[in-house]
Amino acid sequence: MLRPHTHRYDVALDIHPVGGQTLDLALPAWTPGSYLIRDYARHVQQFAAIDDRGEPLPWQKIDKTTWRITTGNARSVRVTYQVYAFDLSVRTSHLDGTHGYFNPSTICMYRCGHAHEPCIIHVQTPPEWRVTTGLERVDGADERNGWATFRAHDYDELADSPFECGTHRLLTFDVDGVPHEIALWGRGNEDERQILADTRTIVEVTRAMFGGLPYQRYVFIVHLVDGGYGGLEHRNSVSNIVDRWGFRPARSYEKFLALTAHEFFHVWNVKRIRPASLGPFDYTRENYTRQLWVMEGITSYYDHLILLRAGLISRERYLEVLADDIKLLQSQPGRALQSLEQSSFDAWIKFYRPDENGPNSSVSYYLKGSLVAFLLDLEIRRHTGGARSLDDVMRYLYAEYAGDQVHDLYSGELAKRPGFDEDDGFCRAVEAVAGEEGGAYRALLARAVASTNELDYDRALEAVGLRLVWSHSLETENDHLPAWHGLRLKMSHGRLTVSVVLAGGPGELAGIYPGDELIALDGIRIDEERLKARLAERKPGDTVVFSLFRRDDLLHIPLQLTEAPPDTLTIMPVESPTEEQQRLLEGWLRVEREQ
Image (cartoon, rainbow, N blue to C red; front, side, top):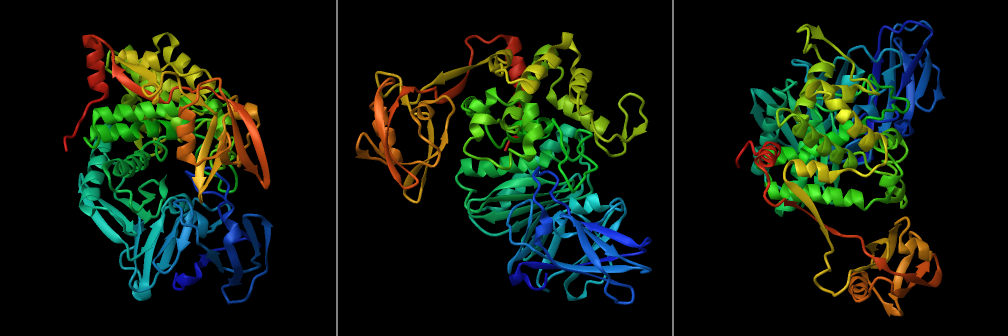
């Protein structure tokens, strides 16, 4: 990456021995952990191949991801090409004058049929740059002129090891004698000492849950950018992108901590606990599973729970977050149309391609999955009197299906399994840990995962002496229930536009469309605040007229307001909770570390 201002990586691939008359190379079409075909081959240019004598070899593309080289009698082949990289996200690659970040799956081709073989990667950077990655560094390798060399056991390990190259800051700490690094690229209002201390605590609390760390070294890559947010897990590293000004106030910083906890939990759940269908990967096409709700939903359930156990948020705050999640899911009409299994399976065509109809037609396996994990955790605690929990299920899955050499729970012998059964493995793990209980867990999962039935929050919360209280935020300001138009709006460049028309709501019935620009209500100009104020004066059943632009046409559309659904949810204690309810509550919302 010696010409960073071109945003192009120069890649050379040496293959030996060759064998055969042709050689096929491919570049992945997607990045594991991000379930969308992205066709990285579209960024490849100036592909060329030569033999061991330096003679050009003929080649052609045989599909969108694969190059076929006619090798003849060549003993070795060198392939060179460039990859344009100017997409700053955790799942792609980015090269500029400040750094070179890359996921090898977007840069490094593999030899078809040989992805299981070990490989060496040499990285050359400008002299003042450092290289940070989770891969094993080859000591004593040629490091002149900015070279660094790393070893991967196979292509899967290489593809699972992002690189951060540049002048980033490097924070370090140890847990159980295992080194951890935090590579910070960019600057904002972060506090390095606080990040270091809180990240260490998250690692320690999660390690305590699983009983140890399953890696020899771990790398956190953190990109600080304006307005960014997201993460991508790897086996012994992670890439996170966060808002550079998101470290203050406390609620903003909590978002960073939750992302850190979420992605670190993936060290176990996803990277070592997974359905058998998710690996080994086919990098050229979709790899389907109906279990993404286990991978991402359960992880989403634990991210704030880990923060609570770590003493980084309060019990009251945790219950606020849980209530917000319930409220958000209940506001999505799509929950009645798409099950969690369907959401998981269709991630390739829906989750990463959201549109204005998404809330009406789909459900997030992150959001609903986290709430199903909450229901299941409390159901296990109820049935076992607090002796077992979802923690035990995750430990069982890790011991049984980690994909590493682990001891079988029953025989004590070493075993290596590829992952739990796609159709029934997770449910069987729950029953192995918590008992069958007359099929109670199986019935819960059938309702919550395989169907579109409403989730039974009341039963779960009753077990720990809590209850849901729904209300309207404007109830105390008026003598009537608030009125509702059934639209989701956004302000952009001074314009108030419709982003979502909720299915079955007043806006849909009136004929308002996504993309309409709202300019007036009953002949009076509006913006977001003015509309909110005017609607607060109306009652359900009133008819108002929206003036709007649809493309270049001015329209005046009457809309009959209806009663607004509740917009405030609080989780409150029941009156006179029993000792059993209090005991289960304390076991569930325990704090393990005081800050």
